[in-house]
Every structure is written in structure tokens, then in C-alpha cells.
Amino acid sequence: MPNHETSVTIAVGESEVSGLHIRPEQATATLVLAHGAGAGMEHPFLQGFAEAIAGEGVATLRFNFPYREAGRRFPDRPPLAIATWKAVMDTAAELSDGVPLWAAGKSFGGRMASMAVAEGMAARGLVYLGYPLHAPGKPEKLRDEHLYGVTVPMLFLQGTRDTFATPDLLESVVKRIGPTATLQWVEGGDHSFAVKGVKRGAAEVGASLAPAVAAFLGSNS
Image (cartoon, rainbow, N blue to C red; front, side):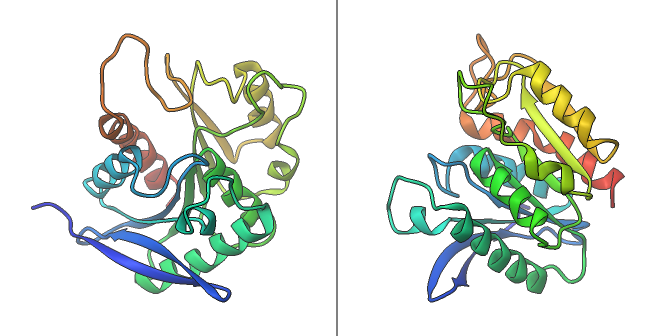
């Protein structure tokens, strides 16, 4: 039987954002999942991932950042994005019946999650679905400083053709973070995890990442 998806409204300061919650029976963990800069929580990639990881016994709470909720294109600045993350995690805790609570995100969403944890937001760990280590073509401007103060388990799930993370630079960052960080490559994947020459829809691509993430959560529960 498919897992039922329910809508959630989350207060962020004086405004609200929308969320989508999927909770399988006897969930072992809850993964709060943020979208990337260019697409909202209903993108097929996130939908496919959320449905697939529910099949692995992991609940999810996806949400929109305020800019996306308002129909704007330019992402929120970090202070508002981090405040949104904290509000959503509070809501997720209320929905989770005490199971471990993880923070995850695609690109921008994952980076904002890591900044929130670096600023004290509680999470069992972090999962990055394509960490944006640097802008394409600008490897000299790394977005890594805050990562070295994060002490919870982190999974970097990254495509080998991702222009937002030069492989040797990301490997160096993960090594510097230490044993709490795990890097897992998706061979041939770009920033959206599409593999050249392999025809798959975004939902199928997202679903393909669920087993690796579920295994990481299970090994760090």
C-alpha cells in the first residue's frame, strides 16, 4: 500500500511555509528535506526520493523556503533560510514520535541545513544530495568554512560530473572534516544526478538515491 502524503503548514516568524509529510508505519527515522535553489518541494526528484525512502522505513518532511512559497526566484538570504530550517525541524520533531531526526537537502537546501546545524540546530546528522562546494567554474571560492565545526555524521552524496564540486576539492574537504563525514560518489552523475546516456526521469533519479541514504541513516542511528 502506498504511503499517504499529508500537507503541513509551518510558521516561520510572521509568515508560513508549506510542507509535505510522508510517514510509513514503524518509521525508524525522519529525514527533513529541503529543495535546491531552482525548484520547490514538489519537484519530481524530491517526490521520487521521498516516496522511495518511505519504502525503506524513513519518514520525510519536505518544505518550501519562503522565497519559493511567495513565488520569487532568488533564494532567501542565509539568516531567513536558517530560521526556516529551525522552524521546520521543530515541526518535524512534533511529528516524529521520538525517532532520530535528520536534516537533508538538495544543493542550496543542504548547504543551508549545514549552516543551521553549525549555528546550533539539533539534528542526528546531515545528508547532502549534491553539496554546492563552489559555483561552477569558481573552485577558488569554497563554501566550506562552517563545515569543520559540525560534529554530527554527514553524508555527501555527489555526482562525479557535478560542476558545483570539483572531485579532488570535495575529497580534500571531507578528509579535513574527519571520520564524521562520508563521501559517496554517483558515477557519471551531474548536479541533478543525471547520468549521460542513461534515460531516466527526475523521479526515478531521485528514487535511485534512497537506498544509499537509508543505509547511512541506519548505520548511524
